[in-house]
Length: 107
Ligand SMILES: [Zn+2]
Image 1: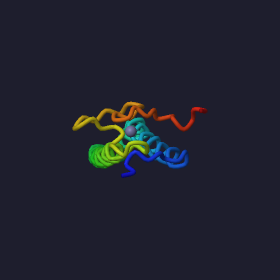
Image 2: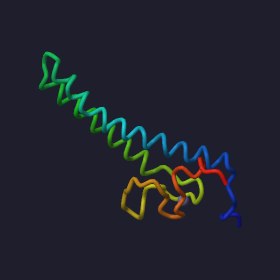
Image 3: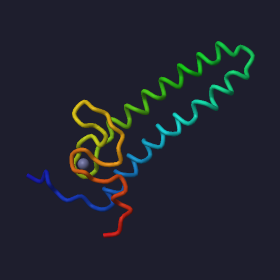
Image 4: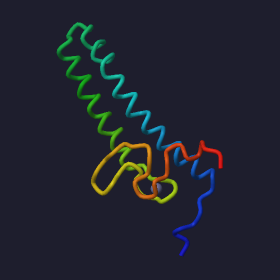
């Protein structure tokens, strides 16, 4: 009966914080790719290290995307970045259009 129940600002804040954290994890991972490869190429067995580093990076990327895809909107309970089977990391909820920085705006 209470599916449309109002959520508290605290719930909204912690929910959005979680989404932002997971987004950061993905961006940091993408940014870290280049310096990581540069470091791998400096090592003695560069070829092997580069491959190992790349495999680890891809696995982490899959985890990061999965975490992001599964994170739920604190307002409507649907997946924040998913529109059906489409994964789109935009700054707004697909179902209820809740902006990612909704808790930072003063009402
Ligand atoms: Zn939503």
